Length: 525
Image 1 (cartoon, rainbow, N blue to C red):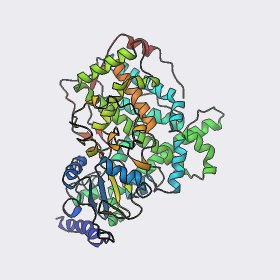
Image 2 (image 1 turned 90 degrees about the vertical axis):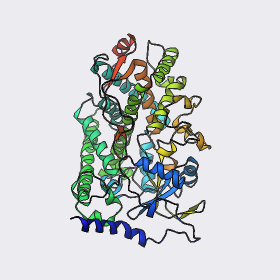
Image 3 (image 1 turned 90 degrees about the horizontal axis):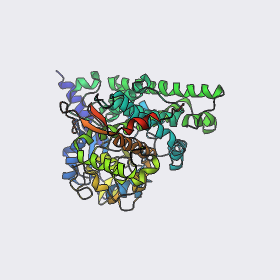
Image 4 (image 1 turned 60 degrees about the vertical axis):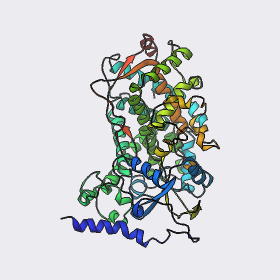
């Protein structure tokens, strides 16, 4: 019945490969090796296929998706050579139809090419993401971490009721981004705004994931998110068809403009009404919009990208920590011992205590290695032909950083499938400092990417993770429910990974938890 569609889609996929001329350099160097015909059919859990291919084809292999060549980097040294040393060539972005051209409309710093627009937008965003800037609003992050602990304590009935932590970690991450971006916050864990923003972030991750599975042509058009759902990015004629994928992408773009535009206008109304508003991204955009020559979509997307990246990644990492830690009581015990010895029980850890809590830092690093929220960093794009170790990398090739394989490099991480924070003991560097090491085999992890497109928010992300995870460990014993085991193999999402829904118990560790929580001073936006 669908044989005609099968043939059509097969031709659409194969013809671009046949017609493509630049699979060899002028010197005869071939593109890197890869699976049969170089075609990638990535099903659910695509990182597993890439990991298997890396074992067969080496640290640099290639695959095709439609007419787009992807070269997958699976080794730290290769990542350094290409993405860092040759950053002038490998720092642009592929303009995907769904993500870059439709949802973000080429506006956000994560989506723009390596050009003047990217430098302009990154400069504006970095005003709020430098180490000095983060120190300036650490009080905000501190307060939100306090509210996270109080919410878990109160809504679990002091440990008597198991909770799904997703909405709590989501509000924590979202409120931090709200304060940085709009100088406001949401009060309730189950606030409609928090839930809406998390829904938009999940929709973004689902629409932009690299997920190609068994080919069912009818699902390509009629299903919301089936196999081959992102073929529209790689087979140009599909972009002319009114598919559900295209419709969802356009709808998400409109919703992002509506949600973040409304917050921008609300802040402007506060300022116009004479209110003294704390420094934040939207305030800067309001004050400099004409000078910076920003249009309405620029303004909305600059703010939206903070939440799209910051909320999902931070919330996801904390959720993975909470999913992992119940099955490692010895790790919890060691963390509790360090906290009691260094901090005591009269108060909880603050930002300035981070350097004195090496085991807590080691836990956070190990969670990100074992369960990074993204199995690959956002692909870079080559802007000219390049030869590397006898292999040809054509211009306009998408360069994929295979984080999963790099995080399971046995040379760097012996017994890599074991959750073992001890491997980071003695590593006193922050993630930002570690990313600058000349010996890349000593880098802690690759969660935030590499090179000139490394995540600009990694400093604030580290601060958020430390405050939340250190205080959870200070306040609670985190326990799984015997009747509801937590899956550490399955996950939700495609390009972004969060655990399958689970519940845990938050048992207060000592009687001082209640007293410290009672001392929280309320903050008004």
